Image (cartoon, rainbow, N blue to C red; front, side, top):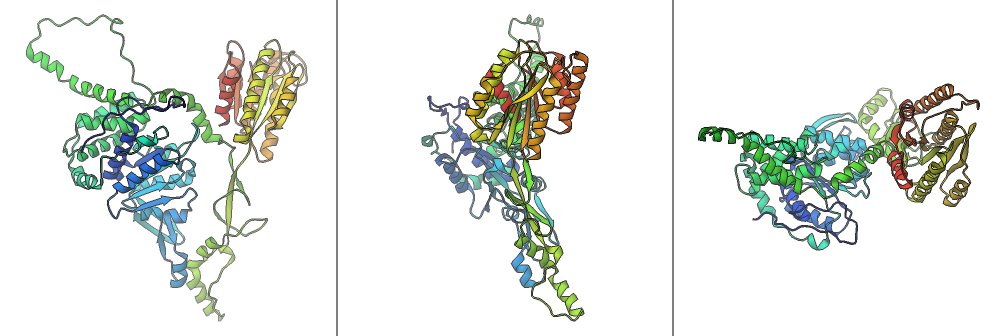
Length: 606
């Protein structure tokens, strides 16, 4: 057996490869090693988050992972829209009706006890499903309390979450991602590299009995914790996973004690993909004068001074190995995508998720009658009625009535609940006043045209409100038409006073109309915040500013997602105060072009 040798992965030069691997180790060999270590300690490592599009490389990794599982290991695949009854278990309808008493059936998580669960399209998993999965993960059992059943069943498994996200705003939920030790990226692995596997199931079977006897010292655990801290990893699970992976690798290499090599593997596979910052740089050698050398130290003093350095030397050594495994460009992407990813969680790519009576995808059931187009869920209705059949037959017998084979009452009715994503509408409210309007309006035009180009993919609409002189007007109603937008933007004038309150009021009215129609509005206010015209068209900075802040508070009361872009050459307190009162994201962009403005807007809109 041998550890994977150096085989740097290099993407094609002509295609963009923002996440190229660091030097020294092949991503494919590391991915195979992660599959082996996960199989040796499935519960201790949690599993793998595998980010890769469907294709031969991902299929090859899955095939290797399945072949590594010992015979008899349960393997279950969880579909994207799995029902709670199938996931956690519940009432076996057919067996209950035949037996006349509640009969429970196992769910997928219970069936996978001691094995592996494959989570299909994990980037789109519902938060509720992820929460139930995490609960079973943390407790090691499934607690079932539904349909007249109350039971606890052991459920300890590893998860292989298949992430097919294509953008920075698509990925696993953080709560699920944090519980998986390995974060693998195979999108940039070529097919001809995805071949080798130096391990087989016999290696796994030989390593498992050795794993409980592997020891790791407190100093080594402290070293992993310090490295996680230096890399900006906030979760304690990362350090725990790294310790378990180091032990699993030592067991794989037929060792009873964890060595520096095992720590380096744990740092490379567990800590490096989670890094959010690089370790602080050492000061330059001439920044401070070197400390004076002690006079004639004896040998004992030299040994006492060197001993405390050993943990630091070990940490530096492992840290260097971990830093080498951080993909090039990853940290820059994290900084760029931080705002975008956080906002995407709140708004969604195609609007917020809303309940609907009869359209969208099924999202559970509710007790109720099938009225106003709502659909009766026959299976769930039968499931709710099944446990009571014996009692109802006895009641009818006592009343002298003939017994029915199946008695359904009104309280048993269940209707299907649906959810759908609403359409997003980005509303620009642009300050077209004064001398600064000329170049700001040009940026707004450019940003609107760039956003419209994405409308066919993002299902967004764009609207434009301009305020100048004594009032505000809608220059572009919500539309996806690029031709119409360009025609309206071509004649956008500028100059005059700054009726900021009127502009915010008009933008808010548009946003409120979008909300009432079931859409999701996003308000983008581009101004320097220096209002000087009140709502009635009269001048006066004090009154105009008070009305602008009142309009901003009205936007916040409607809970409209908003972004305030401070367009002044030097950001002023007025813009920040306006954003605070609006509950909006504040972004000073004194010298932004259309591309930068487009990126900021997309980060807010998701």
